[in-house]
Length: 80
Image (cartoon, rainbow, N blue to C red):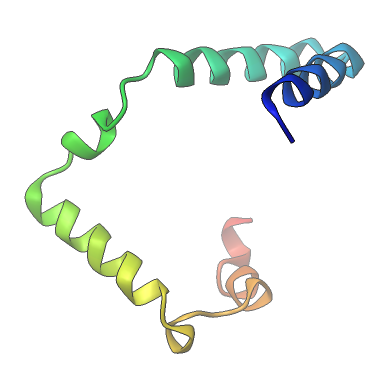
């Protein structure tokens, strides 16, 4: 899908939403995303936090470290 198609589909999606709260949430999300600087969140982490995230990412690439969506839902059911 190219940029023009995405914009057209996005406009159609927005036009189909009648829920003011949902529209406001989308607006706020996009506004924050557009105004945020690339890498700001990463730079705000300590070196230890960055290392832990990099390690977690590497570990997530190994299938034996993963669990199914259903298993995760069951494990955290009390918070859902």
